[in-house]
Length: 237
Image 1 (spheres, rainbow, N blue to C red):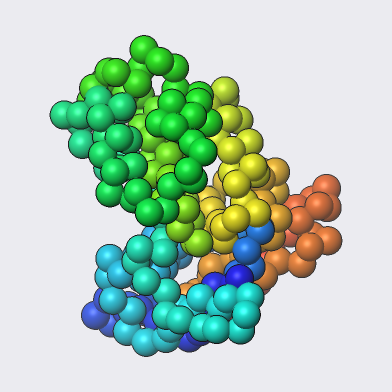
Image 2 (image 1 turned 90 degrees about the vertical axis):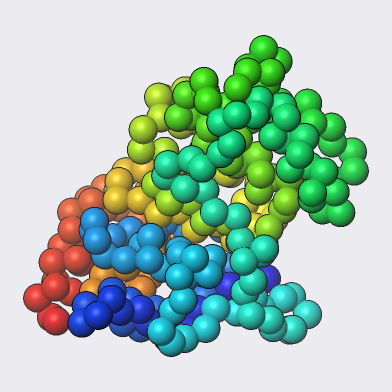
C-alpha cells in the first residue's frame, strides 16, 4: 500500500505555502517530515485530513492489488501536538466509547484493558478524568484511538516535543511495533529525533517535498548536511 501525493498546492491570499507537494509514501515505514517553523508541515497534514481544502492536487491510496482511491478522512489518524480530548470523561469511558463506535474495525482478540496495556496506562489512571491527565498521557490516549481504528495513514504533528524521557521512549517503541500495518508520517523540527526514529526523511522546503538520501540519514554529520540542504534550496529560489 502507498499514499501518493500529486501536485498538492495551498495558498493563503498571496502567500503560497504548498507550491507543488508530490511524493509517494510506503506502508511499513516511518517517515520524518522535516521543515523549518512555518514551512507548511501542519498545512499539509490539514489538507490530507480535509481540515482545510487544498487549492489543487490529489492524495490517493494505492492498494497492493493496484486499485486506487482518493484518501478519505476516516483513513487518516491524526495525532495533534496539543491533544484534543473530552476532559469530562475518564480515560476508560472515552476508550470504551471509541471502541463502541469502531466496533467493526476492532481486533477481536483485544479487550479494553489490552489496549491500555499497550500504551502503559495503569489501572488507576484509566479511571481518572482525562482533565487530570498529563500531556504525555493525553497523547497516549490519542494514539490508542488509531490503534483501535487502524487507519492506513497515521500523521503525527510534533507529538514528542514536550514528553519526559520515559514517555517519549515508550511512544517511539510503540510506533516501531505498529509501523508494519500503516503509513506513518512524523512531523518534527528536531533532527536528532528524526534520524533516530524514522526510516526515511522527507524535507518540506519552499512549498515542495524532497527525499533525503538514505546515506545522509546515517552519516555522522547528518544535521550539518540537512541545514546546508535547506540553506542551498533557499538560495536557489
